Image (cartoon, rainbow, N blue to C red; front, side, top):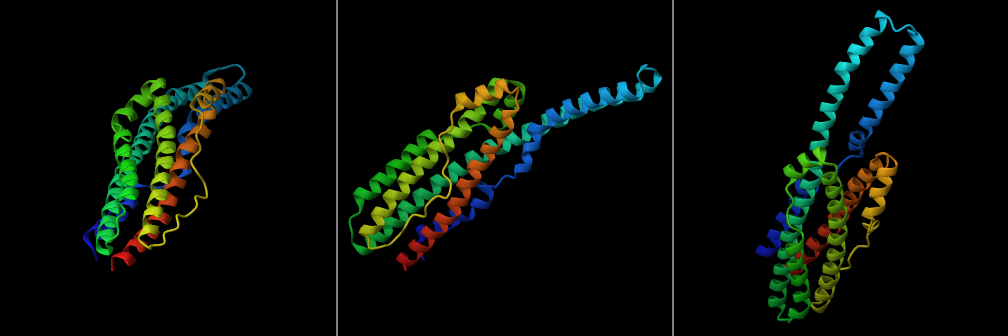
Length: 256
């Protein structure tokens, strides 16, 4: 097996760590503040119902809330930091691995073309340009920094949501162009590589619309916003597994 193909295999083995599928259970983070409000209102209502005179009997309830509210706030703060960190980190690790992957694919195709004596410089130049654009635009974001800022400053949280949505959309469109150029290049080498069709594409979601809906719903729409921030990369990663296995198998056969 050639060195470029072996490097490609290593890139693919990295995906379990770089492309984690995140559970929708993380939505609880956005639901927690609403749970606190609902429980608080319910406690006051039943307190008034059971103890209308607000005597000594309500002291335990009051003390419990004095302890519970700060505790829930601390838990929410910590979990929110962890969530944002994981979202930003997997963006960074996926983009970085994608750079390694595409560079090694180009190198492997060059080796196969040299072996076959076929000039595919024009097709590969388009692929290489896409790789350069990705490296220039998909720069790393500080996961720890943005995780902390997002729970302190509302604007920072909105910005994190913005670049998580937009970066994956642009990344996927750029990636589709790479696969199309690669498929044409392999055709010239007599190698059949049919790019799998995406079952779900990452849409160009409107940040302004999502922001306005979050504000007018007092944060309730933020639950759905988090859902798409989990879902879109998850679907993107699932597609990657399919296309990566196929291109690896194709190049392994051609390199023999």
